[in-house]
Image 1 (cartoon, rainbow, N blue to C red):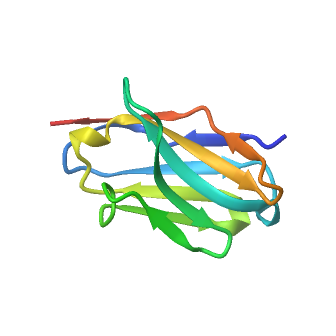
Image 2: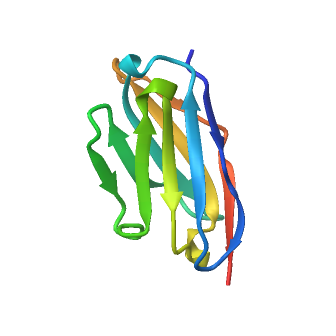
Length: 116
C-alpha cells in the first residue's frame, strides 16, 4: 500500500502564491504518474496538472501560465507551485499517484483558500 501525503495548503489573498507538496511512500521507480486534482464545494473533482516519470507535464487550461508542477525523484515527491492565485482556485487539492501497474493512490487533500 502506498501512502500519499499532501502539505502546503493555506489561505492567501488573490495574486499570492502557495507551493503544495506530495510525498509518496514508495520508490520513484514504482510510480508512473503523479498528479494534482482539486475539488471546490458542490463541484466535481478536476484535473489540475500531472507529471510523468520522465518529466512530461500537462496542465488544465485554467492554470496554464500560473501553476508549475515538478518532481524530486530522490525524495519521491511532487510539487505544485501556484502563482497569481485567484478566488476561483479555492478548493481542496488532492494528489494522486499512479503506479507502474496502474494502481491509484490518493492523498487526504489539502485546503487552498484564496480571498479577493
